[in-house]
Length: 349
Ligand code: NAD
Image 1 (cartoon, protein in one colour):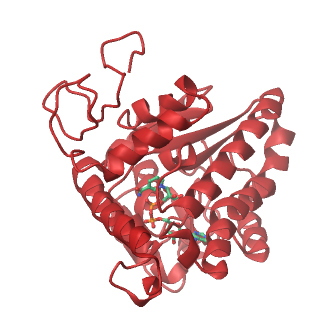
Image 2 (cartoon, rainbow, N blue to C red):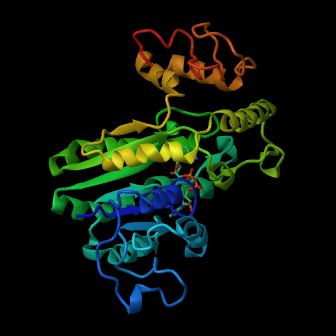
Image 3 (cartoon, rainbow, N blue to C red):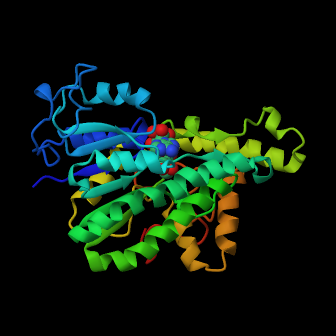
């Protein structure tokens, strides 16, 4: 019996990478075992069989099918009877309903809710429209998708729901308030669901990603520090935002993970019989994440994140436990230190 996987947001980045990785799985765990429909199972409009229904067990979905060429390029040569591409806009109930109809018996064993968008800028400059768009995709899109497949999973008393989550879903990040709010909400959604879903043998897993080398940053709506949207912003916020923008660029340059590294965590969660609620792709932010537990009133986290982003010494190479926040470090050195935490203590990170 093969595993049927449906992934949202496969036109680029993590979703595309995951679809390709699963399609080229050497042990062919996701290879289709159904008979092709139609003449030779080929799509009449092109050379490939992928869009012909009924072949594969990996349903790579995307909002805009016009963007499918990149995925097709990447899977060329991989198992052609493994992958099907479907249109699915997670914000559109009609699109969801028709995607489900294309899945035989509406059976999905592993649902990967990956579609997501970002929004970066001072809150007072974010339009209502932009804010709603982020919540529509990240929160309501995820809810819609889970709602669509959950009854089938409950009925079969089996299933996995994997969510592409973020360090920004666990801790606030300056000038990412709206993105973080939407991702925090998804954490609450999934943590709540997990409690009941264990009764149904359904596992829900949040993959907590730090920065990943995808087009996420360039795809996200972000206020250009030189752009007109920021005209009229108070000078202090403007200066901080400029500083944050630079920090963000260097963080992605210095610390972003390669997609392949992140995909391995997805694969592990898909293939492990009982994956945990949260899997972390990186330990990089763990010291900051743990501050929430160590200092539940939040003051230490707020100070530490402020230093991490805005302290001019945050790119220094200070020794572990020096009390300074820094990026970098040689072999064995932690990438990110926060005051009062050391790598080798019982805090154990
Ligand atoms: P990406 O921009 O390449 O991928 C996002 C995908 O979501 C795109 O293919 C986009 O078309 C799709 N999408 C957007 N709106 C959609 C809609 N309405 N319906 C269906 N699909 C839609 O970036 P990525 O890094 O691959 O992002 C994937 C996920 O990873 C997102 O949920 C993002 O929040 C999360 N994430 C990314 C990073 C990072 O640094 N790249 C870090 C943490 C979390």
